[in-house]
Length: 232
Ligand SMILES: *[C@@H]1O[C@H](CO)[C@@H](O)[C@H](O)[C@H]1NC(C)=O
Picture 1 (tube, protein in one colour):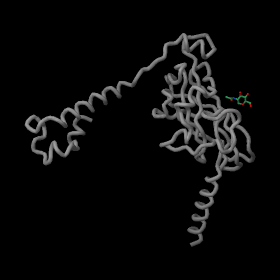
Picture 2 (picture 1 turned 90 degrees about the horizontal axis):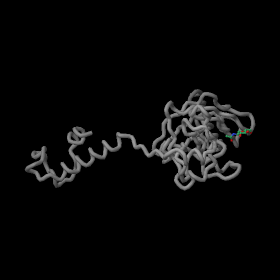
Picture 3 (picture 1 turned 30 degrees about the horizontal axis):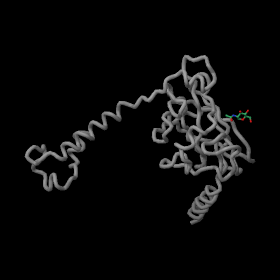
Picture 4 (picture 1 turned 90 degrees about the vertical axis):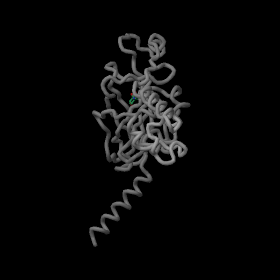
């Protein structure tokens, strides 16, 4: 009885605290100047940048330079509430295409305070996965980062990579020197081919269909499961 009450109280308390948990990286996508508490977004898998529109803000963002090793990034994370709800301990995802649809985990090597006593800043160090090539933005050297605190708040931010082999450190000059890579993973063209094959088979007349005995086929316009798996 007592432990149940205690558990419920703890759950309730954490829910209350969650509702006021605000922290975010500096600078942040879609935020000009110093961010305020309301700029912190609630981040989720479906909305890795919260309500911030990625496409319209990507090229306007102040990009944090990736270190010369092409992988290390140092970010400042600020909080607007003390305690665990204002955690400056973050997890970071990176999308080298900048669309917000290709996020993979980055590794945080030095994290912030998970329960800061006051509002302030922590320097967070992370490394992009080995071989990451930032290709986003007009300059073709940006990566989009989703920075989420352990309390669920944060924001996206943009980092810029120097083109490898270039000794030029100004982003615009190095960007014009380096051709923009628009490499698409080969998986997507393979998937496109598969989709075309599926569509083609779906509209074959029953006499030519590999599944002539299936009921309602092809008028049901549903791809039989076995069929989908065969080409998946
Ligand atoms: C982080 O903060 C420090 C000191 O406040 C500042 O010198 C540095 O430029 C900041 N880094 C970024 C990426 O904003």
